[in-house]
Image (tube, rainbow, N blue to C red; front, side, top):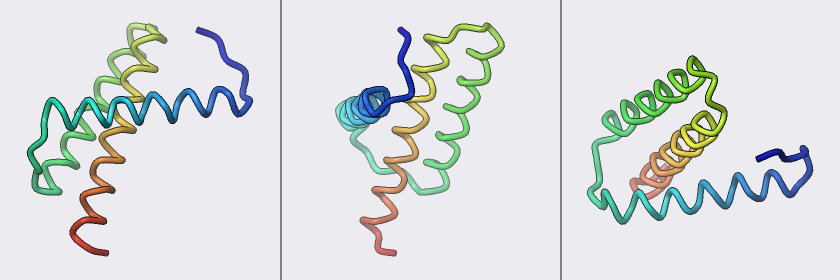
Amino acid sequence: MKFDLSGLARMKVIQDIHFERSRQDRLHPEELDLKMRFITIFEELGEVAEAMQEDDMESVYRELIDSAASCVRMAEEVLKRGI
């Protein structure tokens, strides 16, 4: 999957993050303590590093999407709790 750096590539990334966030809510609807959310983000980032070590760009992309969706989820929970 090759994309140029146009708005089309960004739209795909954002759409994939949105779909992953929806999937997260279906699979894991429970709210976690924010510290646990933060740990989850680092676990996801570790999976990005593993995929990079294997030079598997498809997995790197998928793990980046998972990581970004986890960040969005934590940001949503911070907003719900009040800034």
